[in-house]
Image 1 (cartoon, one colour):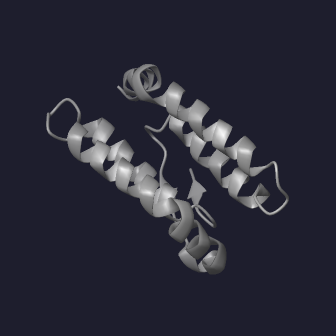
Image 2 (image 1 turned 30 degrees about the horizontal axis):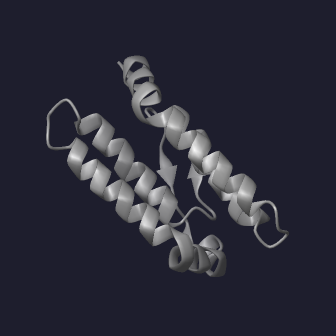
Amino acid sequence: MRLIGNLIWFLFTGLLSCIAWCMTGLLFCLTVIGIPFGVQCFKIARLLLWPMGHTVTTHFSAHPIANLIWILLFGWEMCAGYVVSGAIYCITVVGIPFGLQCFKLAELSLCPFGASVQ
């Protein structure tokens, strides 16, 4: 079931989102200061391809200053977008697994520094 869910996710959401996150990561990596932020974008992009079956654990205290900068400048908008998308997916019974993946991505996009994806 996880394979089917990942394939559906990849076709309708994952591929375009992954490309967008990779392009954002490349833009961040153009400057020396932006490289750590670009690496976090690539972490999120990797999860976007096949999110089902992976768990995300966030540790805000691992890098509090970097996470705070990320939250203030980028993270809250992305988190809000994933929460809204997840709520829309959860309207139907069929969309609930995809909504849960959006909530997982919201958690990761809010505090990516120190987070691990397993």
